[in-house]
Length: 193
Image (cartoon, rainbow, N blue to C red; front, side):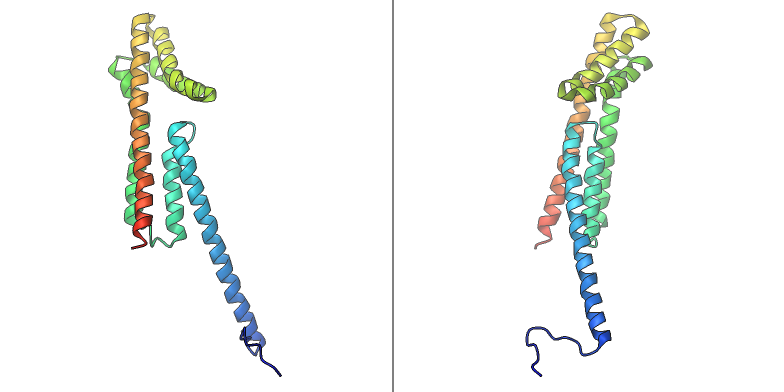
């Protein structure tokens, strides 16, 4: 008989089964790697959006995306050192985001009611797009301070202090997001050399 010159087919049934198993596993492994890479990239992009829109855990999603990319590549490109650095940056940026607004309020002598007002105002403001995100904490802190002390001047001062703290926290969070994104990019580019 004529032999097929393109593909060498094993002569036994066990050989054919082993051949099929090998390529089925290889296909599944490559498919899973592709899915992990796509999920990692989606998490990074959504995380970048989350640094601007506070309803999303931006830095946590970016770190999760980097971890998925590392896992997909068996930690050859994104190793433990890189992932540890990215985790520290994500934790620092998240902490700054939460602490800065409270510190801005406390710096102006805000009451606990004002701090809670800023927190609730931030949550309610998230439903009203960018203006709500900016004005929600300011308004909530001012209302909370006015309820606590009945002093309009102090309430305005606390509202502005909370707003300034919010802006500082957002700038720190965006800086951390850029650090994470650029680290991922440079480590990936360096893997080609």
